[in-house]
Picture 1 (cartoon, rainbow, N blue to C red):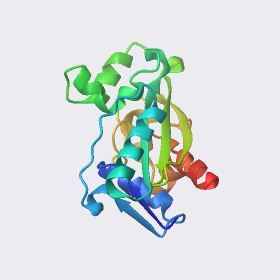
Picture 2: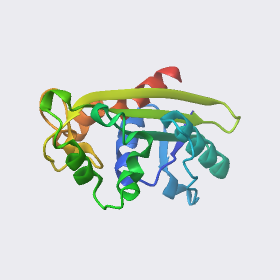
Picture 3: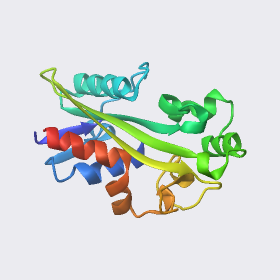
Picture 4: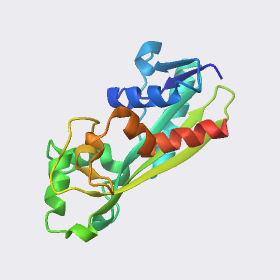
Length: 191
């Protein structure tokens, strides 16, 4: 496979996925570079279902192999929330800042009970109808306050076992330990 389209409009995800996928494909295009507008509704109840919905829709729209991910933060003290609703979590609670909301919800939770994990499912849909799926996780905990200027989304409040947040890592470090990096490497191994 020479070319793949990243089925996302999120600049952070596109940059991250391009960096990880570069060794495996000759061309890694963003959805915007194809000139196609495609934003399917994520109606799945799992990360895998949502990744498949997006990958299949972009593959059908572009005629090219399409790679999509669905990922999110699962916090044990919140019974796995925000989970598959991670991207829409703030809006569901009628606030602008998902990180501030999560920190508020977690403020009474003791340090030893703040475990969480980032989860990613990636799906590659091909024009012949075949799909390849892989998953990855990154375990850590919810910090008491945001730290770091890198990354995006929940990265500033997700602390690794060494105490640094994902937002404090270089891009290379993040790609080595992230849920998305693990999922994309697992997918590449399947190809």
